[in-house]
Amino acid sequence: NDEHGQPFDPHFKINNAVSNIICSVTFGDRFEYHDSHFQKLLRLIDETLYLQGSIWSQVSLFDFDFKHMKTMAKPQAVSLEDWNPSETRDFIDCYLKEIAKADADSSFCEENLIFSTLDLFFAGTETTSTTIRWALLYMALYPDVQERVQAEIDAVIGQSRQPAMDDRDNMPYTNAVIHEVQRISNIVPLNVPRMATSDTTLAGFYVPKGTVLIPNLTSVLFDKNEWETPHTFNPKHFLEDGQFKKRETFLPFSAGKRGCLGEPLARIELFLFFTALLQKFTFQAPKDVKLSLQFRTGMTLCPQPYQICALSR
Image 1 (cartoon, rainbow, N blue to C red):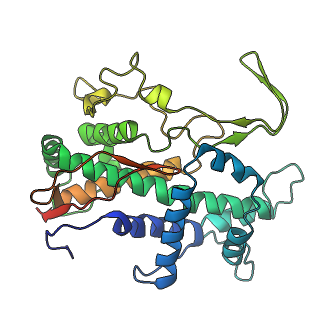
Image 2 (cartoon, one colour; image 1 turned 90 degrees about the vertical axis):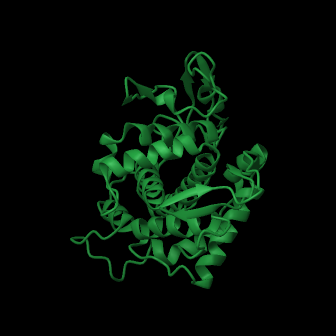
């Protein structure tokens, strides 16, 4: 509403909102949108993820001790002064409760708490924010899809209340559009590198301890044998007889025990943000501007900076 229908770059407006949700879940607190420290942190994260665009720089993260990041996270992550085991307020409280069980075989420890907190903050902010930016771009480029999503929102939710997760099962088209945005935007094409913690054998292949594994998610998200039009934005990929259709080859969060830690939260965020935005606004290109689907390569594939107009409905 602050933009009054004028062109604006949605990047940091979306980052602000998404990262504050992560802060609420993780720390039990949130920042004011104009907090200078908060804004500096978001810009540093954005620059860091851009500079980590090379796969070799991502692999080198295994040798990086995260000294400065640990220093930033530690005051929040390990502050026990006001921790009450009988009152769980946030993710950190839940983790501290597990640490307190003192199980020698458990992986719950102070160091893992810090890294898990950083995982949630970095991955939870950047991936969700980037996906929403792609979604708004696709809505502006495919106004017929946007109109159909808005028609479904009006029919199921209306304008008098906010969207809720209970609405998702009654909104197959909107759900399909969100999934198709995730598929075609392919924001983490090689996922995040993993390292084998012990010698193992997988599908007949010996994988020694210390081996860096790089999953190629692009191979399944654009497989011509699995998707009718793999290189075209097509919500019908996730529809069958008008109902939402799950696809086994839809793996933007990867799979298995080392899949994305924040997948459940990301799914909730994407649905609520996307439906709330299209409930109140119609997104379109500024006058005489041709929007592009060109991306900027970093740790994630994000849209090139763009301006868009949000018109109140």
